[in-house]
Length: 304
Image 1 (spheres, rainbow, N blue to C red):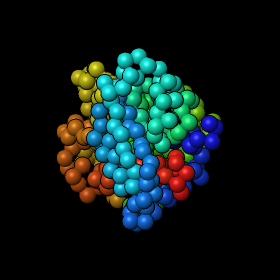
Image 2 (cartoon, helix red, strand yellow; image 1 turned 180 degrees about the horizontal axis):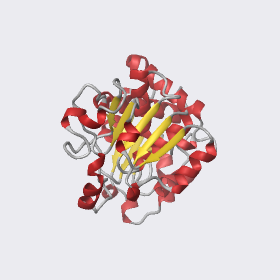
Image 3 (tube, one colour; image 1 turned 60 degrees about the vertical axis):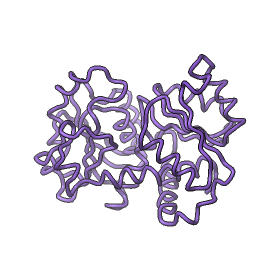
Image 4 (spheres, helix red, strand yellow; image 1 turned 135 degrees about the vertical axis):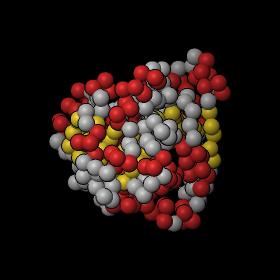
């Protein structure tokens, strides 16, 4: 079971493996026809304990474009939603399908699946991390600006699951990540300690949006409230100074990119002028979920 290739988190894989997956995404994107039978007679199960647009569509379309089959499961469709253990679910699915992508709440649920599965488990999102999104983001940055190593990236807002995966990527790919967050939503001491112990990359924490963005080559934000947040109004009041607008983007490098994992709440964390403006690559970023997901699947199943 130790030889199974799970894609659980960016920081669980080494730089060479992550680079291999990105290179494979580039190859698959460039020549879709060459890979159309890669997963013939293979089936991917998609478990959604949280709603999804990009994750579901990119994995389902990606698997089918690679010649495979897809089975979509929700809690009400499964005994997992009626008390069956995660371990038993993993054991059963391992007898039926060739890989499982799960989009869930606690990170521990993904790791519990992987512990008991004899097939690859892919983390499609948890409340703690979003590694598939970051692979697409890295692919997008490098398509537009070349290797990300040694570059600077700014994150604005809550240090949420996407920001945490960006921090993992900063260490693995050795670039600077500037996190502009209010104290209430700052990165954890554990995350900062991990990054320091790893000895690569650089996490810079500030309360100033202008300081984070100044001269940077990429500016990123996300919705102020995630699906599991209930304090929506309170969060909006605290995070309003971190809105990415035209005035803030003027502090960035003249050719800086703007990214957002979507869905965007226009007029809140980002203005129309930025998300629809010349800096924005959010639609390339969204498309690249498809290509990154294909490469993750190919690596997990040992197809490349």
